[in-house]
Length: 113
Length: 118
Image (tube, rainbow over all chains, first blue to last red; front, side, top):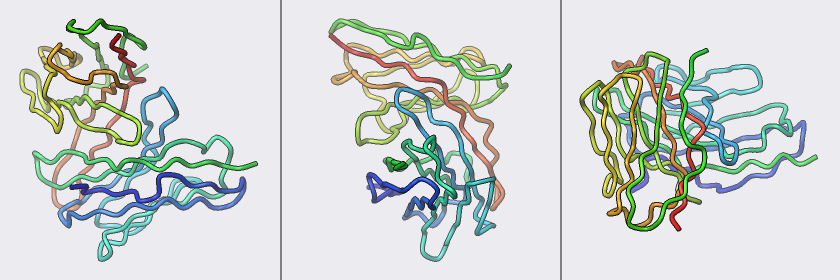
């Protein structure tokens, strides 16, 4: 039973355009959400996070939007650059002491020249 | 400079042998985690430890064992009981904060160890 779903295994975007990666979750008790970027044969690197008390968080070219009523979050990258080609993981966690971070299966982003 | 290290980068093992993967962090994080990544599977949690001398099973703990004798170190042993051990193993650490609508839990990952069973 996947609690965090990234329904698009891959996405191709032209360089300079906006990349939008989507993530859906099923657990309404999740209160903290993260996006990670991963290159092949490397560990994931943290990109951006958002708490459930917000609906938007921005950091440079990266913006995460949270729609709690739809249990949906998205990562916007603008403008997209060649170095953005990687696998992006969405993750979520509840507010309790024993809650663990749950990762989605990832979306592979290809930035086209 | 602070970080999380894993060694070795590549590891080969014969069937039937146990092997231990190293994970060290100097970030002063309380919590440490082991994940396994397989193609198309995302990150699956093997074991995690929220404090020294304590650890809990994750979603796929069978065939693995861990110890947490020091805050900085969280080694993972892949035993011969693990039926399909060939994978990319990732260690992470964090200092989670829990609470009503204000918690954080940014996990920082090591570079990974690619284990291949021959």
